[in-house]
Image (cartoon, rainbow, N blue to C red; front, side):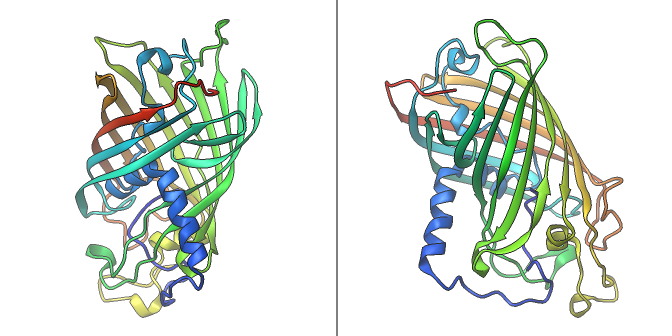
Length: 318
């Protein structure tokens, strides 16, 4: 799902707080469980999320020669230079540090920026149903979206299919090639979890062999959004139209295409450094002609640090 300066899913709608503190607590619990991905969203908006803290560990764990710990607790930090949303002319530099918790049980999973349950696990494919949350922003946006209201926390729920491509190693290690097919139903936590649309983000990734202590990977993907979701980022309601920003009705379809690379290595037994770079394009996207789109191609750069303060001695399930 794209993360961007927030506007109501129906342009012109006023923000109002969630009516129940229970909803707020649920959203914040998801944010803690999904801290790595949420940090990446907050500090590297519109970029491919950096390697999550749930992947922190020694190289033997990453490459599957040993099972990961059942749970880990620590801190995840990210600093990034990025466009504020796909196609935005304005860039931002951000840094964020958040706590994270991972849990890798046979069914319950808190990892990779999501919280959910694993419904199917086979050597070739894995299916889970999970929820995640992205931090919102208050006030009004700037640049091409100046004066347009923002929305708050977005919560995503849905199935995700992960497929290991290529020959399966006999020792049970994951294949270097992987296809992820997440389908997410999006809700606005600041509006009583009102539906805000649907996203689909197929992505192919390839993990190379370690190079001088670094673990490199490359990835490419496409991001699609429903009309309702895309209107969050690209629609201009008549009341927000100006002489230089005409009214515009957003269309459902392709949001952006992305390619990137990540390099990570252990600095200390519990401290991992990650370097991330990606390029995102809205050329050919459904809303390329929106007046709030100012640039067709944008690079993103991010640096991450993952500190695992505590980990269980009991082995989890990969």
